[in-house]
Image (cartoon, rainbow, N blue to C red; front, side):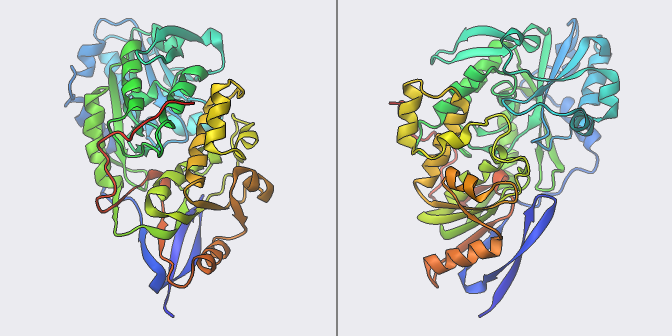
Length: 438
């Protein structure tokens, strides 16, 4: 029997697995698209070629102050390079550093530490302007902007709402809630209150499967509407390759520039796979901090595995299950139907967490999920509804024994940033059907 040695990222390390060649469908990663030679030059090129908008200097001219809203350390956007360039453009248009602030779009993630902020945003940015975490749990720091047309409460960071000019900074990758991260997602959930985030997350799980790679969907419509309501009409988004290097930058209108970036993003992350597998072995890299990030491994794997198959998630999760959603393990033993009933009955205080518990349950109800993790204990894995293994090889061997000698195995090396596409089974342009919560 011929065996293939496969290397899988595992945090800052890697693990090697032996897979029988006859069982292997293939080893898949985001496409290895070449990066730009000079990131600064690419940012300046994008600023000189606005999509659906005036130039940044024209937009900023005459404004009193500016807020730059940027993603956090769970994303690889090179904000340390981008933000000084944007500040220089604001300076040239009449807004001094003293009137500029950077707000970290945490959503409901934990606050970044001072060291993490320094690493993410760079010494120059910290020397010139304040860089502050978004306090999503502080009612005094939020402004109520009413309701969306579909009934979602809009509560947004006060400093963002009150800024004379505001701009979003992030990267465009497939995402299970709004189809793709980027664009207006920097507002919701980035700088929104918890109630607003719960609304969009619960909206996403009305569909039977995730919106991963689905451009037209109800969640994206709500995000775009919220950004317009806030007055954040401008973004600078990058598309990165699997090494976190910039492939291209997109500047301009929050909708038009985002959609142009999605087309490029698909060139990197849309990965054709010839068949559904009995077993999908997937690394959570680069979303390795906690399972609240690593869970993004589930949705690409769900697209690549047969119903009733096995998904093996390899993830360090050295910060555990969820730093800011400490009650997740109280919800995850329930199925999706029961969780929906509990949400409707207002029995769950953490509705953001409940939405993800529903999403995880929907995956578990279609296939088994096994996990290899140094940061999640076997008892925690059991509460998550996962089967825990001490090594990836042990998990794979057990899966092959369960599925039989003809079992087919697919490996996803960077699963959270992948969009597996199997023949005509995947339609990334149309919204999947939704149903109301019971």
